[in-house]
Image (cartoon, rainbow, N blue to C red; front, top):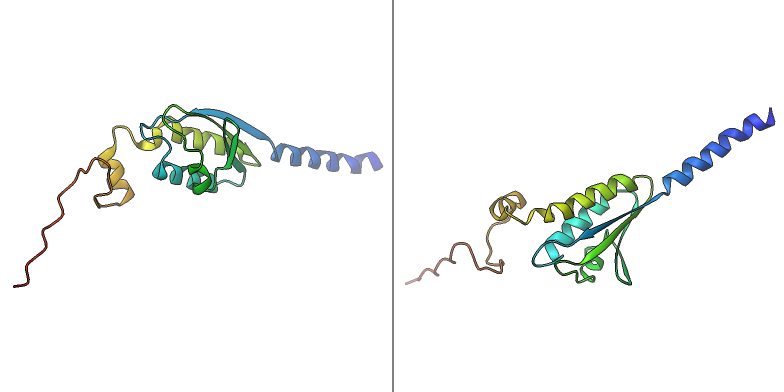
Length: 142
């Protein structure tokens, strides 16, 4: 009877070990401007949705994927290979979701207008291309 009581404890330990499983995936930065502020923000927001610890590794640098500032310190240019590591109960799902962001280039290719519309941003002249409507001329008060 004592051995029967021990079995659930062993099973529980195995479940805890499974919950701390680590998954890794290599991704490539595909955006011409690299992993700049907007995709770094998307990445950090997606990473924060998951319980698992999310880290990005580039050469000898390892950063917290849930921190936009740490992601930006990678200075990952176009073509940079990164390894995304997730450790925790939802690591597999987290890796898949983050991998999709990279596969879709953070929705930057072929969706400039829709990306602008979807984000709810209006043209503020902050785009590097300078595209958009010209700023209105100041009205004279006289």
